[in-house]
Length: 130
Image 1 (cartoon, rainbow, N blue to C red):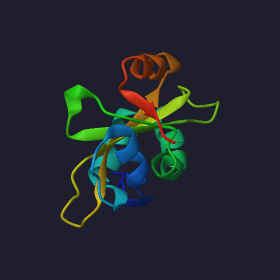
Image 2 (cartoon, rainbow, N blue to C red):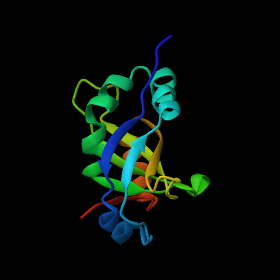
Image 3 (cartoon, rainbow, N blue to C red):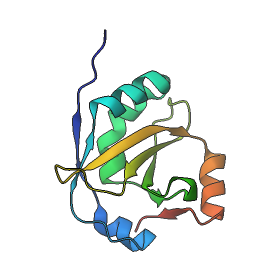
């Protein structure tokens, strides 16, 4: 059976996210838990190699940040993926709450198409990070 280790991703760019979303996130590291790692590998196998190869860059230097009203306890970071990926952008969902270790947890990650990016930007649910 394949095991999926927890992975330290890096520091959350909380100041840029707060500026774009009007939130009050604190400084903290982002971690991918064993369970979330397995979820991405098993439920999004076509995206998995591209997501894992780009995860640090997506989280620490996203192009967009957003929030889905249906998932109020999470926000998401979006960044372009390499051309060979199934879709041109990666979405990484992260929980708003710090865990008991003082870190933020990745909930899921998968690729999204340009139409989804355009639709979420039009709906004002996806904002360019400055």
